[in-house]
Length: 392
Image (cartoon, one colour):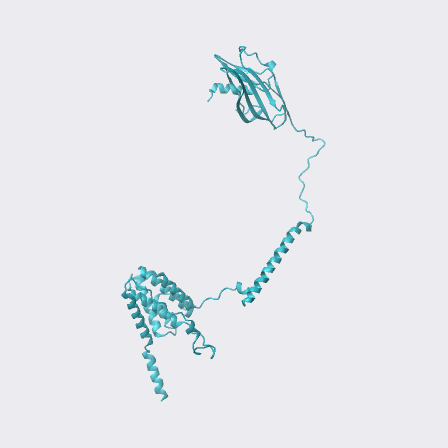
């Protein structure tokens, strides 16, 4: 880093270099072997705000030290420094050197600027300023504004132009092409849908809701595929199972089971015409689910399978009956066979448990349930006997 005293001297050089002629400069007290300073402007005539190159060339001995002026220090110079180009060595002949320092400057003051190139020279105990022999002239011109022959007017207001078709003709052609393409696509789509007996309105109609028993069967199938109780997730298993039954009761019988407790559901079901066995199975499922969810009970594998089978049978036996087809409608089969008997989903096979004997116990539980379902109700048997006596 330069010495502060030298920096101050360089700044002073930059300030005094402009506006001083060579005739007005004092004669330097240096020897005849002192360096020779020259300068130039490229170009020497510019407009205000334009840029120019200021070059300082020094011929000196190898051991002599010179310091070039610096610009852009405190802003007092009449020029603005754009770029400080490094020193170039133009020629070297033995001990003789020719150095060139260039500055890219911009002038913002009009007039003729007279500049004397100068550098700082230091030799032994001598520190002095060397000036060039010629004064450089830089002409800075500005724009002449004739305010006498030209008047200054305000900004003109907006002018509304008449509408012309040429402004939208290009867009209108593309709109017509797009409409024709859309019409062709709609026509082709209608032909394809008519081939399959459908219309465009069918595409925008919402799908009809599925019957509650179909939704319940699909949910039971998904619950079986999750194998929750096989992973000791009994609470999640019984929660999902009772939610399926609650949703079925809402859709099939209009009972608000989703917001009811188990006791409230059992009480509400009593007002519905259900087979006694199905009502008892629903009660058993809800009671067992409450024990698992709130008392942290751990049912055995047979009990889990029996609860799933009871839920499936409850939906199967309480779903609405399908209308019987007309006689002769079924080809090659029993005319009395109903579509419900032909399309009803079969009860899923109970998944194998971890123990080998659990499968047998599950089948035994299913057989017992089917036997219980086949046994006639004592109350109905008594009503049949009373009806026969009354007929006699």
